[in-house]
Length: 537
Ligand code: TXA
Ligand code: MG
Image 1 (cartoon, rainbow, N blue to C red):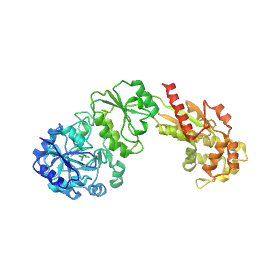
Image 2 (image 1 turned 120 degrees about the horizontal axis):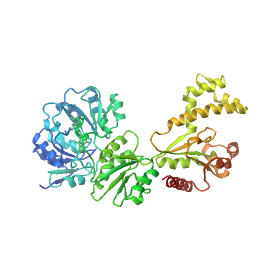
Image 3 (image 1 turned 30 degrees about the vertical axis):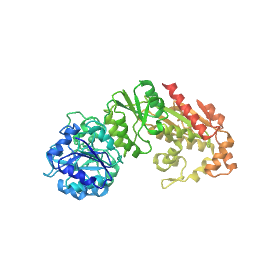
Image 4 (image 1 turned 90 degrees about the horizontal axis):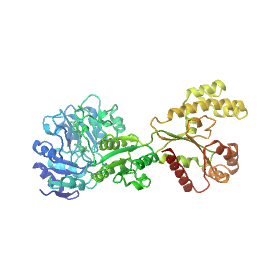
């Protein structure tokens, strides 16, 4: 058969598509998540064609798409209050709810389950088609079974040209990963698949939410799972995918070590330059999850090429929408995932105010390293640590009132009495060090401990290398006056009250001189860090 391409904005499109669907044909439809391969969800024969076209296992049920939330009651029963609240909050939108199915929903749509997955997509054309057809549409993602999902009409055409009646071209999908699935058929709502609506958003509306373990773990083939689709290898291009975690320096060193021509790298846009020699393909920016969800499947499809050996893939960290990206990438990789950094590399960063420590720390953060700011830790402890405050109070009675430190009072004591200052430092250094040890990531990582008192506080002992940042005094004075709005004289006295640059240098393993522009210093920091990894590996 010839597959018709119907323009999304064509005035006849809803009716043409609806007619095909009503007569039992298949039409690929755009949604905000991915393209779906739709049939009349109440017609078992039409639904059977979806399974054949996709090569989909019969035990994997389909989602029923409706044009308005009010239609939910036609196909579901025993609908809990929470379902109405979720529909109100997120429909039309990328959320699918699993609810007890009415008898009018055929067994082949639900794969024989007593429940049905239902969703109202946020796509105007598709909702018009559903309304025009007057039936709900059963539609899985339009990809061939096991392959990355389809986010453009061209992707659908690639997989189904000549095998389905029509494709409605609604342009690229906005969200790019399939809907969030939440099961409301049991007492406790359960997240079955992460997507564009985050667990945090769901919990804000319905409270308690259990995350099914299949969301983040591999499931045995014959296991009983809540969403049958979760047990199949999914989204997988025709090559090996390996997720390479860890900071960019370690990841690059790993790829370099294991590189074979014909391999590829799937990374974030900001990493393209670092992976330039390794045939990189970017799918979005790590600081903008929407770009990653929108770009992931198109990238995986581009990598669906049997001539490619291994794809080394970079995966975002964190929760929220990142969870959806992690879940799809993990499935594409068959859960093959490694941390490129075998052992933590802990750098102690120190130097006087205004020297430019934050430039080095910024470079480390951008590379995916973890920065621990000891000054921030100290100030947080002053507010939160009952233990530290009670130690201060027992050495300096009267300085803690109602659980709050009277800083001026304490300052007056310690700045005129060296022994008192030593005692105070002993208390605070001990508390800060304990807190920093607790903050160290459990997984191997590139870690920077930022402390002006790196040595006095005993933190240098836990560092693999200590780095002093120095800068010419006039440049520091300029930076301080601009940054803190203080006079030159005050800035000078602040600088001179601290250790001299020579002292910092003599204490540290390495000194980085910040004696040029900020851009030049950034470059110097990056070169220094890159050099470290070469030494390490
Ligand atoms: O965004 C989406 O949800 C897209 C667009 C087209 O709407 N559809 C989609 O469908 O992703 P599909 O078939 O690729 O994924 C549906 C998932 C499968 O994992 C399936 O096992 C699960 O939903 N599912 C369907 N009915 C279910 C039910 N009654 N109980 C539990 N899981 C169900
Ligand atoms: Mg699918």
